Length: 112
Length: 114
Image (cartoon, rainbow over all chains, first blue to last red; front, side, top):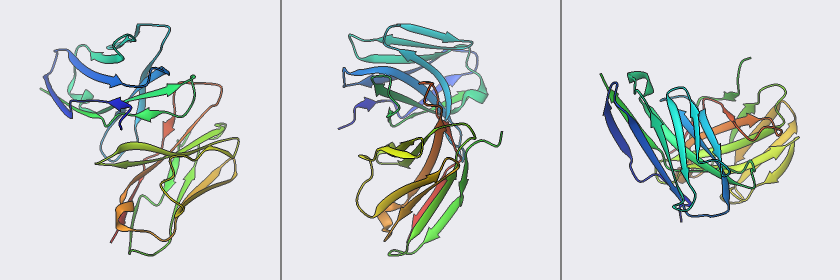
């Protein structure tokens, strides 16, 4: 049973527009969430994080929103750039621990 | 910094053979993680170490899998005997225990078991 779900396997967005990647989780004990980006033939790289005491965290073009009651978080990329084309993984942990559970990933394609 | 180093980058072996994957974490990091990525199951945590001590190995699929960290700069993941269903990309990652934020991933080892 997947505890972290990313229900959209892929997403295509026009350059300059907003990309919204969604993530849902089932375990209410999760209190720390991260987004990773992965290019082909490379390991995932950290993008942005949010703890359960916040509902929003922003870093440049990237913003993560957390809705604890809905057990849902989303990553917004504005404006999207072709270099953002990658697979994005959502990950969650309990007790701010290091044992992260990853979602299956969403492949984002930003079209020029 | 060279980042997390994994070797080999690609491994093709036959069923029943022993496979050893190697990882050198980033200097100064005291946590090390082994992950497996497959199409079916995505990215799964297999085991992680803090200060060279295994903390959680609940993700290790079965006894054929074992991991060691003899010192702070080296870890191995061994599969013996290997099976075709072990074919996957295996990632090693390291991090600082004091920081909850990021784990730094290596480039991965693509394992194919024929």
